Length: 485
Ligand SMILES: O=C1CCCN[C@@H]1CCCn1cnc2cc(F)c(Cl)cc2c1=O
Ligand SMILES: [Mg+2]
Image (tube, rainbow, N blue to C red):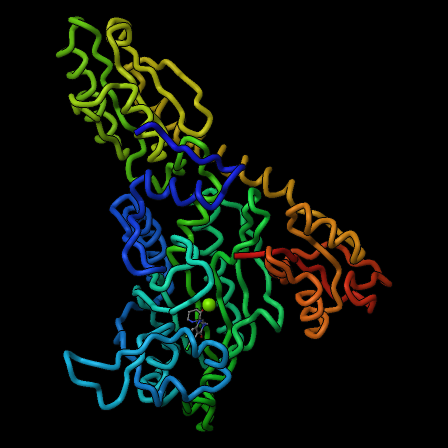
């Protein structure tokens, strides 16, 4: 193709949509808010899944699979759990031509599906801790503007649901899982995130507290919740009577957590790293890390060039890299360069007559277009070093851009100005829910209201007497604010 026609800094929405389609990650579907995830997406999802699944298995968390369907009685069991969510619940009302006696909900999340069985399975302290996870899809019939990966009516995620005898165990696990989410973003997707606690207004209403990793998109000036790890306290234990006989023979309620990350992670990666040539994939999650392209020239030794390409693929795949060659004879080298740049492959290796003659290959980095000639002799070491450099460089550049968007403010006027400059705002806050509601009301507009993103665990110094940016009351904590997805 002729490359991407939309510019990232000019019309972000169209650019994003074009990049995910031209990069062959997404195909649009005839039902709004639903997208086809093509292999280029699924390979990224699987690489992250392999890491996360192995990590939770080390924590003795087991995978299971609960039904997609939820009976209405169970779903409605928890009023404030689903208050506000009800409009986005999808229902099955018919089979064939006949109406179902009772409509059946499709899971938007699985608390109400799973916890009646937690109640049945957990009797005594020996049944604890019960730690289950499922990899599945969920459906939320949202109406706000659908965006591939970021907001879709069906998406893939993992949802972990754990039950412990003590709060201490639950509190510990919440943070262990949050650290895994940080690693997914920072070590695999090369995206800096901030760990913190959600406000009372933004937390999961059914829970005790919510922690999250927060990402930020400098181009749009919007925060995006990257993943969440909730401590549910004993709220659901009360609701679903999940009790156990403790070691003293007393009846006690369990302490629970639930945690999730979804295919939204992939959308954040596209938004942060993508450029006007298309996708830019971090090597750790790239299904093809190196693409080898023959550059035949007139009657120069074409077979020799093809053989060198094949040998390069073998050497690198033997060394454990994900490498392919593009031997298609119906496309020119130039077309192939553009195609694989659109797909975001981290390194391109070109082999032409000159390279062959000098027993070297020409390597081109996708992230910064640097061109490097390396000898075929130490191909593996050089490619390994290059891929590591690309991974680190993508993170460093993304962190530098994100940090440049962070603005510390002390007053409302500074806050409003920073918001207008698409900043991620760090402000001293009184931590009162009414004040947060007031901030939302005062910043409402077609760009969307500002909201609290998280209160970072890493709290800067808060001098005595510091006042809240919004209320003037004594500030209690530093909190990140911004517009969000
Ligand atoms: O975020 C997680 C981690 C994994 C398990 N779930 C929690 C909370 C999910 C909140 N949430 C989010 N969206 C929802 C949409 C709904 F239609 C209904 Cl009925 C409920 C919810 C809802 O509870
Ligand atoms: Mg929602």
